[in-house]
Length: 165
Image 1 (cartoon, rainbow, N blue to C red):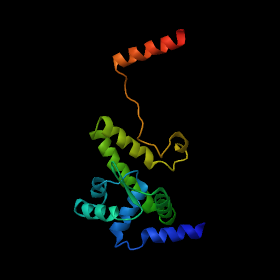
Image 2 (tube, rainbow, N blue to C red):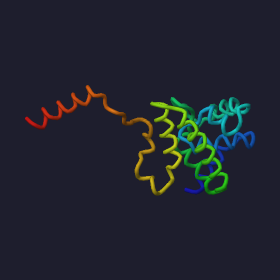
Image 3 (cartoon, rainbow, N blue to C red):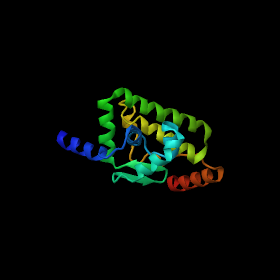
């Protein structure tokens, strides 16, 4: 199995032009969705557009509603490799993403804030204390929000009819 992982890692990192591109891969593998804004915050606004375009061209990168993300196997291999190979760099990537999301969380509301909250939760997917509380594959797809008064009355009425009959 270890041989297969090495082969995949070589494939995913082959033809990486330089350190900024490798950092882009590391960041993309660590976060739920990599946006151009995230890359600008982490690597500088002048490089972000080109790095995002380069990342988008990788065969193992997929496009979602809020950015780019690696195929699950590529994500696991790239993220685990950095975590094993260079724990300090791994922590630096984690801190960069954490600070970015923390800033955004205080500046947003509603659906955008929920998406950022999901991004923050996803960053901690390897934490043994929280790992069992979330389904990371569906994170951000469902959420709760306050019930409007008329919805609550309809719900209570339906519940009462069902349970009192």
